[in-house]
Image (cartoon, rainbow, N blue to C red; front, side, top):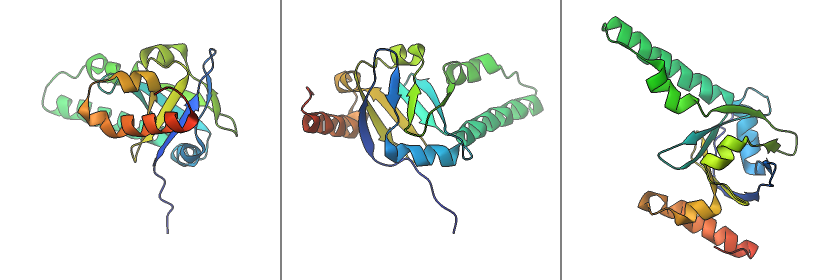
Length: 164
């Protein structure tokens, strides 16, 4: 039976001023599995969620194939397809980041700034991908769709003895 690899659960970690942080253990194996055995995380900014989205390289390949399919359909229908309008918002903040055996990586400063990450970093599994927030930013958002993530982040911060 084929192994099913999904991003499940939540985790809390920290980031230092140089952007170094560790991917939580429960997210590493799905990343490696989703990156064809390589220790690579694909991270990009999600403007709607005001967070980072992470996945393996196979999911990135799938998203690129979807974009190519949309371009092919537009061409067949005689319509214009502009990659800078469709792909730009999705891919202009996307980075392939190698991590070591302990899950440590350096998050690009652009992503740290866009996601408003300070010290505490909250990971939330979404099945095929995961979300990453600066805890303080996540807790400041007024969006009922984020209630579960906010509750778990607040709970984890309380357990840590941090301010939530």
